[in-house]
Amino acid sequence: MLTAGIVIVGLGFLAAMFGQWLAPFDPSAQELALRLAAPTFAHPLGLDELGRDILARILAGARISLLVGSVVVGVSAGVGTAVGAVAGYVGGVADDLISRVVDTLMAFPGLLLAIAIVAVLGPSLVNVVLALTLIGWVGYARLVRGQTLRAREFEYVHAARALGAGTGRILWRHIIPAVLPAVVVQATLGMAGAIVGEASLSFLGLGVQPPTPSWGTMLNGGRAHLLDAPHLTVFPGLAIVVLVLGFNALGEGLRKLVDPKAR
Image (cartoon, rainbow, N blue to C red):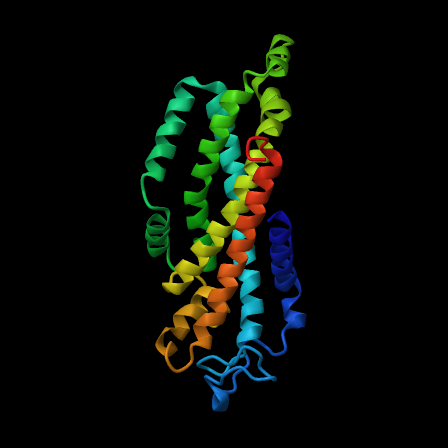
């Protein structure tokens, strides 16, 4: 499972980084006379409703999906790890306050909250990243808080405290390295959620705006042609499914690797 996840995710990142050179056509170039054309040798995945090459647009959309996922997961994991470590180690009022905020945000369905945020801020790629980050850090905070409550009882943490190490030093040198494996696994699984979130918001018209290629907007554009040109939705949908399954497989494989009980 781990190997399959690495292969799929690796191919996804290669497509995102080198897609503009791998793509057979410009993703924005139109051939209106061939609109909705089925897959052929020249256009392996066919053409969309405006005569644009679907393969080229899927490769370009991979860059958007992985960029959004990487930024959202990076910021969410950083903020959530810092907040959760402080809450778990310091405890007291800080822990109560942070826990109440986390519980409040987790009470709302994540996607609905993201839709509300983007609807207020306006549709754009930056606002999608902001909305997904605002709802994404809470999961990391809760995870890290639980891990910190366990890690702060380790003997070397007590020894560091007895030697006069400050809270910041203990968190940075001892607590965070102890919880980092769990955060890495959570971040890998979080990439799948961020990709689905971006595609969902773009599908609803709240994310990436045309003509920028996005898997979500491609699905939205193909809705009207499900019967006469199903390839408009089948191939972008498969791209989302395969990449999400790849990240899930990678996360599950890493979980088994770092968790003796899972092994």
